Each structure stands twice: as structure tokens, then as C-alpha cells.
Length: 378
Ligand SMILES: Cc1cc2nc3c(=O)[nH]c(=O)nc-3n(C[C@H](O)[C@H](O)[C@H](O)COP(=O)(O)OP(=O)(O)OC[C@H]3O[C@@H](n4cnc5c(N)ncnc54)[C@H](O)[C@@H]3O)c2cc1C
Image 1: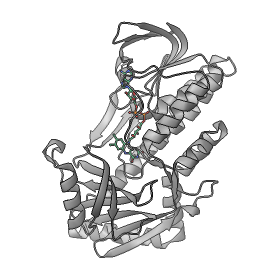
Image 2: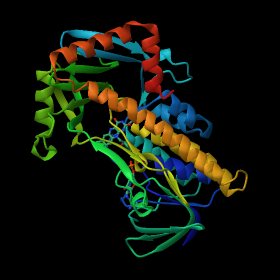
Image 3: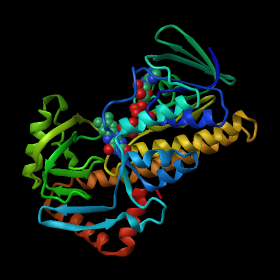
Image 4: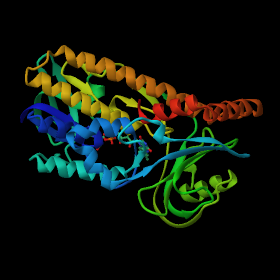
């Protein structure tokens, strides 16, 4: 098979890239190793800058009815609230966090792709990729050869495309694993805000979900604990209660124990190979930035690549895209890393200083505006 653009990976970033390229009249194929879109809620938070980036393609209007807006973030210490901010401090047509489960986002993107006459080819794993100045050749696990002028690696954190392009993915894995659960639960914290509880034993975050009465709860586990040695739900409830967040659970949809990473690809372009989404960068979930960064990679890449394919802009614009998006990802990795590390301060003086700094920032209008703008992707 031959195509102008091969997108490897039909997660949210690959589907968005393929959809926008197809809409721009580019001959594009998208393949995925999995049998179908994800069935879990995974990344749920879409921020103002992402909704603005998706608006011209109509994708924001598609996503809005699937989600629920959240307007307030509150930070707590064990002694009570340190302060909070409203997302309306961000000047945007979308001054909120839209909570949409990733399975709904992927399902809607999949349907939209079908509506423009393309389908992701599922159960099609790329096992090998070779490339030269004029294009790339991918070989599937089934032995099929796909030749493409351009290959976009949207194949996630363990990207085969990135590995076979010889692009390093440097960074670290954090020492603290996390547990996450989507629960219908009674909880003393109000249901309309995102709550971050900075307990000496570790962070607890409680977030509204798109369904009435449901919450997402995220708990930081002790450093060095192996995910395999945990009992996901009982451990999460135990840690949350010990840190001042008792939960009266009546239903559970999904839970997961995982490690988190801070990693950045050495370049987002090598010859005909381009990287976007988790294949290019991985960041801590604190701040809910991973998917947002990836979706904005997709929008900007599709626009530039369509221009190159149609001969409207020179190829070097792809280098500018790669440099700009890598710089943006580096910035986000920097502040999410800082935010993650501040949740793990253990010494009493260190915690006192952190809490005083957080409270002072949240007391000043400039501080609240800065936080709101940073999280919104500005
Ligand atoms: C438990 C969990 C919770 C998360 N919570 C959040 C959150 O709250 N906020 C947030 O912003 N982010 C969160 N994330 C991260 C978020 O899910 C990712 O940032 C997002 O999915 C990245 O999208 P992507 O399309 O780049 O990659 P992925 O969603 O990982 O998609 C990659 C796709 O590539 C396919 N693939 C892989 N290798 C190959 C191959 N060789 N050939 C063909 N196909 C291949 C895979 O099957 C997959 O469908 C979470 C992730 C997990 C796992």
C-alpha cells in the first residue's frame, strides 16, 4: 500500500491528526495495534487553549455536549483550604475545564473520521519502520508493507516509530506511583470544584466527572511502592481517608495503579518522520496537561503538513513546527514537574514554606491569574 501520510496510532492524537489531514484533502491512512478505541475514561480534562485550537474544525462543538464544565480549583492543607481560583480569570470563549472521558473523545473522533470516508485500521501493529529522504516504509505485524511520504508517530509513550527513527526519549520516572478511581461516592468536599489536598503523606486530588454524583480520585502512593504490590481500591480509599478525604463509595467504574514519567523526545522531526502526543512527550498528570499538549500538537501539525503536501508552504515549516512544539512541551514538562515535586515535600519546614507560598499566590489576583492561565494552556 502507498499513501501520502501514514499516521501510526489511533489514540486521541492520531485520530485528530488523521481527521484534520483528511479534511484538508490529504491522502492519509491511520493504523492502530488495538482492536478499537479505549473503553476507559483515562485523560478527562480539556483546557481553554485546547478547546480554542479545536474550534475551527468543529471538534469543540462536537466535544462540548459530551462533557461538563468545572469552574473552580481549591487547594487544601491538613489544616484547611489554602485558597483557590476560578477558571473565569482566563479570557476565553471557554473559561472552564471541560471534563470528557477519553473513551467518549476517541469514540466521537472515530465517528467523525468515518463521516469523512476514512476509518482507522485496527489490529494493525507497525513492527518496523525504515526511512530515507523521500519517505518511509512501515511493516505491519501481519507482514504488509505501507509506503508513505510522511509518517506521523502518534503511537504513545512506547512509540515504535520514535525508536526506529533513532530519536532518544530522555527523562525520568517519578518515585511515587499513583492510584486513580472513578467513583460514585459521598465526599465532604463540594462536588463542583477540583480539590488538591496537600497532605504530608502525599497528594489526594478529587475531580468532578461528567456524570452527576461521580468523582475521579487520584492518590499519590509512598515512594518506591510497586504498583503490583497494591490492592487498588482498598488502598486508595484507605489513603484518602487517612489524608482527610473519607469516601462513601456506592459504585466504581474504573481504577488503575500506574507510574508517571517526565520524558521528551530529542526532536519531533527526523526526515519524513514526525512525532506528536505521548510519543513526543510525557508529563505528570498533575495539571491534566498530557492530552491537551498532544491535541494541540495534532492541530498545528495537521495544518503545517497539509500545507507542505499541497505545496503551499516549504518543507522547512515542519522544522519550525517541531522546534516550536518541543519548546512548548518542554515548558509544560517544567511546570508540571515543579508542581509534582512540591506535592512530595516531606520536611515540616519545607511543607510550611510550600503552603505559605501557595496561600500567598492564591491570595493575589496576579497569582491566581498566572495559575489559571498556565493550567489553561496560555
Ligand atoms: C490511567 C491513565 C490516566 C491518565 N490520566 C490523564 C489525565 O488525567 N490527564 C491527561 O492529560 N492525561 C492523562 N493520561 C494520559 C493520556 O491518556 C495520554 O496523554 C493520551 O492518551 C495521549 O494520547 P496519544 O494519542 O498521544 O497516545 P495514546 O492514547 O497512548 O495512543 C497511542 C495509540 O497507539 C497505538 N499503538 C502503539 N504502538 C503501536 C504500533 N507499533 N503500531 C500501531 N499502533 C500502535 C496504541 O494502541 C494506542 O491506541 C492518562 C493515561 C492513563 C493510562
